[in-house]
Length: 365
Image (cartoon, rainbow, N blue to C red):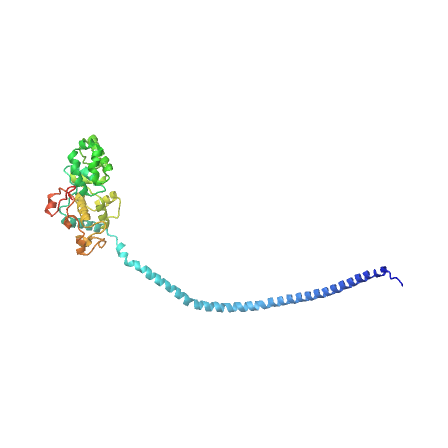
């Protein structure tokens, strides 16, 4: 039996290499063909792109030509919508028209000469309604008046009038009150409220009168305002009612009413005093103060004015702020106008003659 040599199988390798080369060549050829096809396809795409570019201007031109037509149509159509939009301001105008109904109230600035005439007429009317107007603090001399006026802060004149008889019975002069025991004075003044501060003021005021003015109340504004607890309002009360020297007393009632009457819109007492003083002769200042304060306490109240019972309603710009029904308004009247006691225990005879009723003493009910 013949043996076959294994070495004879080795020549297969060169054949495989050749076969591999041929396969590569075929692939290369195929790739080349493919590449050629791809190149041709690319060329075709480029040609198509070029063609589309050429075609695009035509479309663009067409679209550009078509666009104005639409724009023109839109412009023609737009005014109709715009007109609709412009109609809205008409509503705005209507809304703005509403405030004009309230305008007359703010409105017309009263000429100064007309204001002076109206203000003086109001004062004349009040003088007829309150011929008995007077300071509503009980006093017998300037010392008692200045002490009573200081005590009237943050309380009623009635409460002061019910308290001062006991005070003046024990301390009738500035010298007596200057040397008083503060605790004893506090106990007397307790019903007036803020009694500790008021005790300090009246004792200090009395000491100043003794040390600087020989125990006498000075009759000059510049001296009075130097006393402890004495401001311009207190000073004018004393000057007008104890010395007969004209002055305007701007208390809470006076300030409220002159603003309601539109004599001034100032709120600072000194500015109110100056503004109102310019409307009247100086000789009328003291009685003007009494007329206005009387009216504020009796009819033109802070919270609910009795407009329906007011004798100067036709002259008042604020008419209607309070009760306008005459019957209901009459029920709001205070003091002698409503049939009630006044502020003073010892009022002037003219007040009593007019039907005024004296206030009861402290503790009388």
